[in-house]
Image (tube, rainbow, N blue to C red; front, side, top):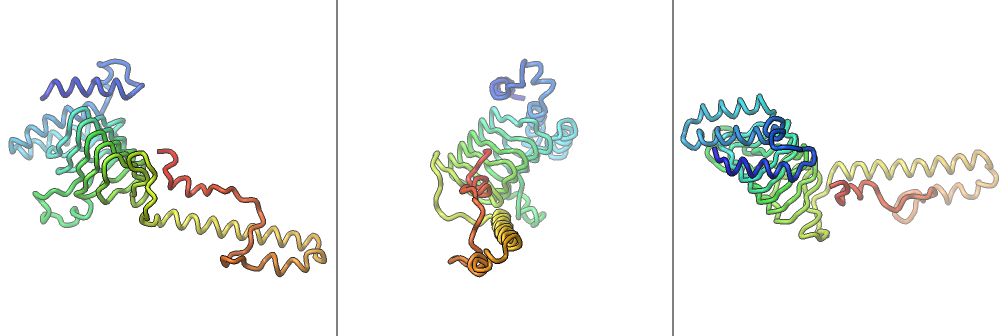
Length: 260
């Protein structure tokens, strides 16, 4: 067990978590810290080829903390697993120094897991660079690399490598900022977002037609002439918009990384 690394982790938790008030509180009440200590023991056993014993120690850690770290995983210094319940870190995962991982995160094998024993002994889990932050319930799958200081938004599913200093959001995960600048290149379509936007547009069109029908019922003679023009499609094939719309599409705001 490496006492300098443990002391560093305690200092890191006290620095990054405003809820932490003392070193004793961190030792007794922080599952991320406890899981790290147990993993050091399990990893030492694993590297000395006590595989079953290492797995058993890691299983004890899972029961006590709710955090499952395979004893073969490589974890750097000052890695803070905040809250931690439901975190799963696979056998060949590698996590660099100063990373932060929130609850529900999976660093999994992705498609390689379906190969079963054929993938045994192969690198099949993610590699996280230094200073990476992975938001709650995010999925990072496969033998991919996340560059230093990358941030993964909560709930994202990342299936491909990303460069350093990136901000990733969505399903599937895509880079929306890199080195502090908006990425304007074409990105894979977000199927869920496109479906939501399509439904939103359909609702707006129905609202417009309903408003026009209400006006015709109230004054049929006055609106007789307008009936043909107001319900006729616009140049883009959609009924003309009568209501005042908000210029900013909330779906686009979400896709642009609001809340990260």
